[in-house]
Length: 193
Image (cartoon, rainbow, N blue to C red; front, side, top):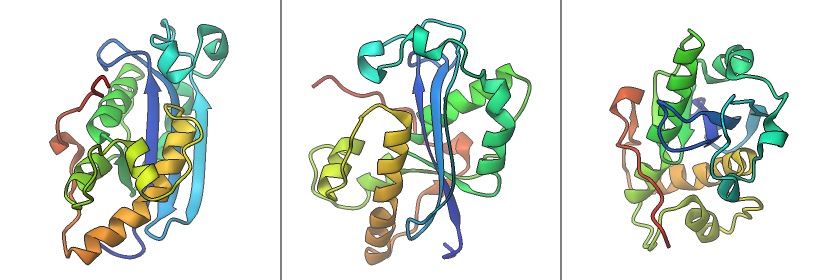
């Protein structure tokens, strides 16, 4: 990987688990370099036009989302941030599936040609952790997670863990599992505690 590679670290909050029916409620993207420097960012709530689903998890209510932009209104800005960058997400298959579904609904495509699933990457780093959740990785590397299941905070935490994961991968001499989005690992759903 070239040191100048830029990553689009992304997180979405959704109204459910099925991208065919559920919608994106919030999206955050941080454009970062391999050393963790942030180059650009966006974060927005979205009006999904549907019930927001598990409010107890993401904290987003219908009242908070009413009047927010629709996905179609932010698609161009999102595309600009994703263009020629490696999409990075924790459980990237999930985030990618929702972005692709939202783009399809509004008749556009997002320029995502390569993706790095940090859940997959973490599983190859021999970290000795019982869980590879974002919260577990944040704790492992002493990164403060202020609001779990908040798109912006999750993207910020992931962006802070990314340089540590890249360093660990380099120490192990491993090639990063950057792949075409269509070949991402299957979506993994959180398990009940």
